[in-house]
Image: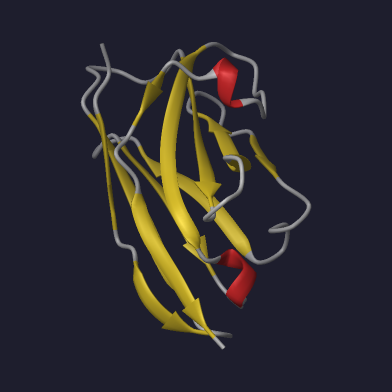
Length: 124
């Protein structure tokens, strides 16, 4: 069982930056992939970025590549999503999720554990 708690969302102007955090309760995350997803009103939840905890391999959705950076802190069992150059279309509830695997996947079905989500609103 892994518990995930997101924080760091809020209201930001277009062009601004926000950093999200996801604290994980697992004793070790070395066998996990952690990811960020987002869901805008009326839309399906979509993949944003993921990181393989062991090895630090990362993968991004095309829509955020070059603007968002995913990272992790081993000592704190915490994952981050640094979001720069934000656009109104980035407005969504952002969720962190994890899967016990060494393979990064982009489908929500591949992730077993989910956080409660944190709202990010980008004003134009």
